[in-house]
Image 1 (spheres, rainbow, N blue to C red):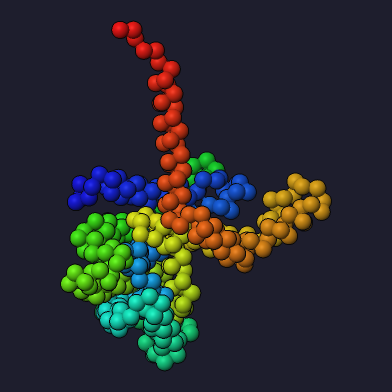
Image 2 (image 1 turned 30 degrees about the horizontal axis):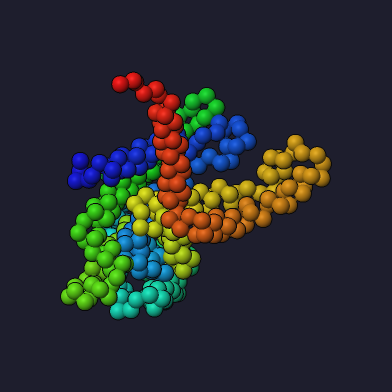
Length: 400
């Protein structure tokens, strides 16, 4: 169905169901519970889950299939964001033209960067992409201030007059999809639970499903097979008369366009953009997302992006006061000792927890979270198979 095999279609269906039910699945604890701190079903975080999932899916097409590690992919995220923002400021507050412009601008820029960077491979390629990203950041931060807003960035202002807009003078426009406000939300109370269904999240979720579907088609296509051949043994490809560069450049541009799409969606959800999106740490983040989830797998980058954004937004909000509330049942003095041990791993120290998790994944699960899930599933399958074998051995054999 949809040109996919049974296994791939099932995976797409699972991702679609999880995306649809995310406001419910990410709010497992009632609002009155102390564990409500770990709920992640609010619109801003859910939007980041799917948007950065798109960013990681695109990066995985380059890194997971070809093995080319780019340390400058945040440049395409930022360029796409700026393109989308200017489209909103000048043409329309409708997010569709803005997203299209983000993809086009990021695609053109990634074509230029890839054409130069792919003349080298290995660490030299990675350093070249990092150099381009840092140059882009420096240009956006200072040199191109009239276009980028410099340190303060760009945002929709009351003085903006988009060509196709009915916004009254002096009114700050809002991003919309044919009149639907991207920030529109509907809250549903069920007992002690409060669920928020946000229009912007579901729009971004639909885009992510389309991006995920396209990535499956790329992975299963002859083009994807050629990219795997590049990763496996590029020298052997050259000996057989095949030129790998057009394939790697195409993968680089597609990956850059995915990043531009993510950048455009970020602007659609929150109409402001700054140069920090192009900094090297943002590029490193998408590398961590892909490796943590499982490079070269289909759903791994989505899982990795969700795990990192969850820790960034949930663990980082846990302070000492919250920890003291959690361990208040302990004897006096012991709770202070436990808090002193735990606190460096949460709050501002959430990066330490991320580092430990990343180290554990790299050492014990080189295939990322997907490999961990496969191992757990394998244990249950082996247990079921052994139970079936034991049942067969206990059955009596009829006499002849």
